[in-house]
Amino acid sequence: MKNRLAIAWLILLSCGIAFVFWQYQWKYSLPTPVPEGYHAVSRGTLVQLPASAQALRARNGKPLFLHFFNPDCPCSRFNMPQFKALVDQYGDKVDFAIVVMGDRSFTAAAIQDKFNLSHPLPVLQDSAVAAACGVYSTPQAVLIDARGQLYFRGNYNRSRYCTDERTSFAKLALDGLLQGNYSLIFSPLALKAYGCQLPECTR
Image (tube, rainbow, N blue to C red):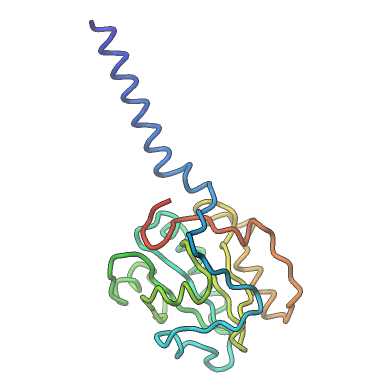
């Protein structure tokens, strides 16, 4: 009887460990499923931002970098230092804004507090911005040039938690655009979405 109980306990424990591994590790190593009816936005497309984001477009003739962020997404939370580093490095050349995704409502002040930025950034909570840019997961980076055309929509890097400094796709995109390099070719790993599926933090 004791052996059976021990075996049952080990099976239950193994299942629990496997579930936790899936929940916090393995599922984020897989590409985010493309949602049904998804409308892709090609590079070079004039992005038709909704009214809520029109004020962000090409302010002072600068490109616009949109950071799609879900506070409930582990990948988004791990990615915060990478985004902050880009703001610090390129904030004088590029306009940055945070687009908050997910079902819960967050105040702009709460988002600013999460990022602990040295200066506040515009914060939007409009899913229409994601649709206009072809975004269906978080975290995602979107870079729009001063003419309003999509230059880059993709991952910060290839790590499931978007923390791999060796494949800094978003940084490469920023450097390419600022150098006027419109022939820059991005790796498929940069363009295939990974992370949390919208609108909720699910797979």
